[in-house]
Length: 201
Image (cartoon, rainbow, N blue to C red):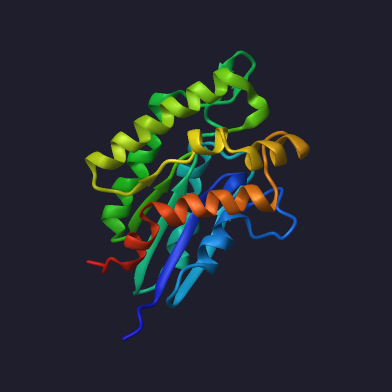
């Protein structure tokens, strides 16, 4: 009995894998390490905030689902906490509302969600990192209260020498092969395998 699992990955440039010369990012590497019959769709868009992702989520996800075991991996936050013109791009309260809305709709659509926390933007500085860590903690608490797996990435990558070195050698935000491999390892070491193995209700 093979299960036809369909997974949509929705998020920002880190989901898209910007900066990886192999064009696989963490999503491709996680899929590569995952056994089973998977159909995956990468719906990452550069500079997307949680507002953008909430707005486009279901019009992009629903056409890609079939009468199968449908999954959604959501990852955002790094762009929400960036400052533009003296204010953060998305207020943290609204970031959490956007996540709540997406998770609520997962329930209605019988889609099984998993949330990957926001990676750090190395050249955005200490204040941005603090805001991102705080948002990630609040996202984690929200996911816990709903029994949705959340995989934290922010602090681990912020102190990871490969991620830092590659990001600074690139555009200041996006790593190369080594950094995305580290992020893939964090996801695989998190609740990913249990989540894939769980049977769809």
